[in-house]
Image 1 (cartoon, rainbow, N blue to C red):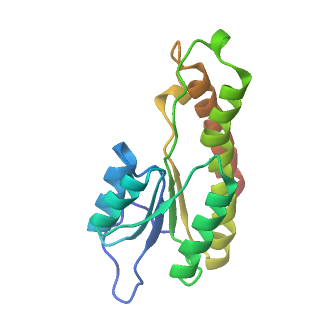
Image 2: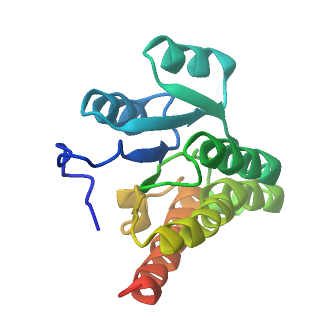
Length: 180
């Protein structure tokens, strides 16, 4: 299995493909552009039209993705697989948002929305690409969580809880996928 650290393609190897979520700013934006510069075929995601346009201006194929909208996840995966003849080498799950506030003041709906975006959406996207990677015999899943998934901070309870959940979920998935 190729790692994201390998940047040169052996002779005869096809262009490597990756979905990078949360590419509107920060780590996701940097990774999308760096991987593109290293020769990867990058499919980046963002929520805002102006962020999608900025990625496209840099020659990166960009898609709308809101983890809270299962339809956008389904459309993303179908569109990428159509463009790559059913192949995907890597997924970089990075997109998220933070709902600030004291835990006691957070409405249940706000906590649910935080988990929709930061846990359930990641799970949905990941479970859609694992069969593709298994079928082709290779693939790499990279989940960029947060230090708050290990060490929570006050007034970041919803975000910290969602990142703790994703840490646990993806550690289990890592164990389950060993050797596959």
